[in-house]
Length: 459
Image 1 (cartoon, rainbow, N blue to C red):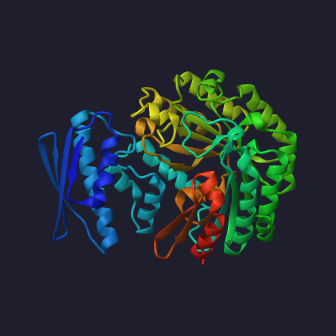
Image 2: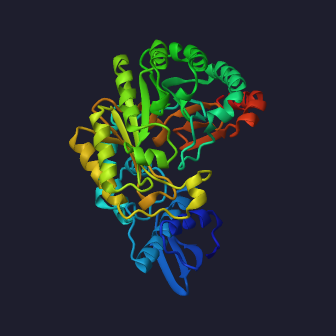
Image 3: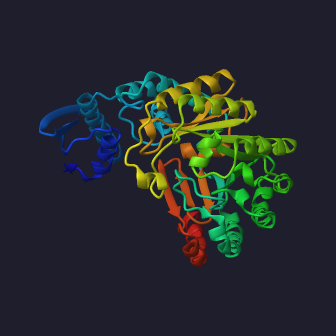
């Protein structure tokens, strides 16, 4: 496709709209003018010309860009939707956090539903956002100094076909572990002074349970001084991960260090699917992990993916039903997406699944009728059916970390390779980011530099 625009900051935004559609123009040109409170967008799509004027009140440059982005994306979406006869579940919204946009509208005294309707969002998704905002009551808190601590353990038994993380099979990366754990010790010791009001600790990956007990214990020991100093109300999660690496000894270790929540992530309850995506465990292993974990009293999160290779709606529905039967406190339903660095993206340019909307609809019905409520959501680029990922929770079991990280309402102090720290300045409406090196050897070689950068970042 040939694409031109005279408004450079809109280039990626408009391309995101184009990528929503399987059919795409061969030639797209865009021009913009602003005249006395009117945003003027001209488009030429494969020789057809379109012109739109939209009025808006501009208070500052940030508001100006927000409105121009909104009008340009909406008008291009309307053009392509009409041309190709397709309507997307979230209309012209391409951002990954629709709930954050809803909160912004509410803070300005507006009804977010009006904007969402204008942007072409389906009624059921507007209702979903309203449910999520209601479920976050009592947890959602915009307050400078609130902090979540994230510790990255990018090691896995194998790499799944859809995975874009920097993880590699641990048998190929285990030789990095001693030096990596040394680096985490240093980072966490230095990080203590930068932690404000600690709301949650999250050890993620990768698959943290891919580590052996002595290695996992080192990580927990390094976190302990920070966790203990901030009191008993801090949520503490370990994304234990794949059920085939669960052991009684690892679970007992987590309990000893005060962990309150774990993740058991089957992605599917179909043995055939698990084999296709590169998993080494079975459906029975999932049940074994739950049985093993029961005596420790952890809250348990489960992840499922809709749209995995070869799965019919019946297969996916069975997975949702089986997840409910485990008694999990949280069940997150992801929709498959193409991610840079994933094997799947190397093989596919556009994800198609004629049944994905049926799968999403069925998951909402099953989870809602079994006492779960949606409490966080986010979207990703190149997501099958342009749908969303939604976390569902039993009453009073919502995960604080998931809400904070998705709504971007607390500082995120992140340590380890490929970890991204965030500072949230509520009064300024500003978020700044600091990323660690992605690959293990580079991260290890530059850890002292990373520590100093983070110290200055959180001053």
